[in-house]
Figure (tube, rainbow, N blue to C red):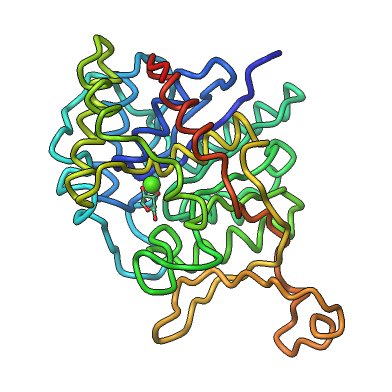
Length: 323
Ligand code: RIB
Ligand code: CA
């Protein structure tokens, strides 16, 4: 079976690094490009971290492009309390790789239009604030036929993390998330939300992290060090592969149980800004009578349950660990 073409949109970050390693190493995927955006850290550090992780994972040729330097409207809000000042828990290093001289939106457009020309489609896996994705879909809607599906890490049908109600990627740029989700609906692009309802379930133990760090594979060594950093940040004996779970959901979609619900993003609200409003009502009477226009939402496949052990095993195997 031919490998599935994918593009990752990242704010590398520790768990974005886990996702990049998986996308490079799993033979069922063909990583066509990586686009960078301001999120966990500033966009230039994201680019540096992304190039370093790709080099460490042995992906010398994958094009990388720098994207949005700040959210569409919100003030930049980073997550250095989780990922460290350098975004990689102190393990960031420069790379000899060179970034494309294209803006991320232009690289996305180039790759998607080429796919259309070749009769292909590409799965987009955003795992960061969706600033690049919103700009792409509003600037170049003609790319839609080249998109197989958008499987994004973000949002939540339940608890928040950045705030009580909002997940970080959506909270960091609520307008972008609202535009991307609305545009996906208007352009008939299938969309899956890999949100906090499943994000924290796929766990790696301290013992497995030590085994990775002690392996002879540079990517596995880096992954082990990043996992140990994350274990320390959260003070636990097991920690999530985070964004990498969204890549697992593209490789093995049967491992993610989803339900299709209408989704909107709260861009107002004193304490709810950035919340993904997942409409789980099931009586047509209420939906038809909804003064806020339930029919204006985009129907999104919401991840509700995940084969956590299976995805952890999939990710470890990509790094040469057979638990
Ligand atoms: O809320 C988790 C998300 O925010 C992940 O993508 C993590 O990398 C951070 O960007
Ligand atoms: Ca991320």
